[in-house]
Image (cartoon, rainbow, N blue to C red; front, side, top):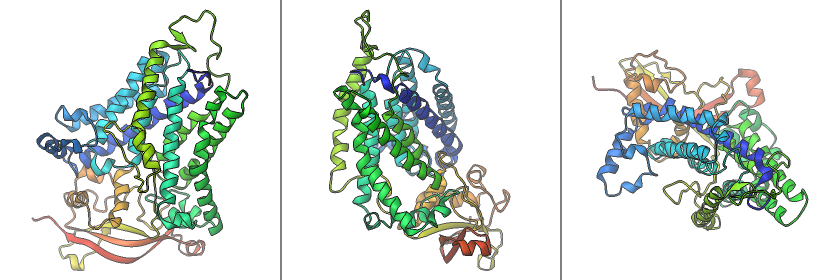
Length: 494
């Protein structure tokens, strides 16, 4: 740190700008591929219905946030245009093109991405209700003020990224300690690898590790989320304590966060949550010698302070003041008796509260969707629809999809946890009965090759990973039992 300029954090800025832009690119690609069948004009939960309600209701503020579709009628064509523009702008930032211009240029590009994606999440309803949506929005907003290659990054903005990472990690740690008993008796990860929403290729191997290892995982998690985040702010001490120690402490804390997040990447599919945390963790990695010289030149013009243009310094300082005010609810929430998880306290999705998996599901229940073309459902032969990410076929190795987000598969995991089947699921079954092609493209396989089934139903099973001995015998990765029909058979009136 060198006063107003974080001269040793040029590498951190490059990772932050390009990494966050890459995540926006993935988010817009995911939306382009999935929004229309889920939320489009003919989707399961049409965004047009929500916007019509918002236009006619005095309680329209129930929308999560502002959206460009509020001022203009939603159409699938406009959604495609928005996503295409977001992909193009994100790609230019990944390549570093706007960063070659004055700092106002990358700022405007990031703000366009931020508002464009917020326009989507604001009408995304349950399909966009995940914590990593608001995390991406907040990270993109802060990235807008990282500046360009023409001058060093502002100390204020780098510190705000530390504050974001602190809320993300420390909030998640507190929610676990206050949540299920399994986090306190160190048994949480004995279940988690098997029951998590979308297992990855290595999840079964992680689940089969010894119990003592799983207890060590929980202890490591508590250390990484409750102790380590405090040391992220150590580089600030470099303003008063000379030498490399403060920066080294901050970089070490970031390294611990990186290591724990990479383990989560290897053992699960949590969309871009872990990758966003990894990118943000680089904000605490200072590398001397990469940025601009820290000494102020004797002939530095008066509109430059520590190498930063005065208007930009004013803008980032105002951002810091605004964030102090915006952060009070999130700070209070961290130490509240009833801590909120993944909560936003303003419509702009800034200074949010984060957290995940306050409790761990101990038994995995999967909803399997089946269909038949037989006339009599009581004597029919039923065939399963295959999903891309969620467990189904007992022999299939779970695939790695993260940081790409399979929204339908994720919500299928939540279905058994609710008291009743959600509205979108009923609409989903109707689309299957209609053999709706956009909906079928969300699946891995249609057992009827595009033909309409006569009946569909939903069946629940208890799933568990096979032991090593069971795998050698059957070559299956999963075992399932406790079969129960939870809905159906249902068909269309013909």
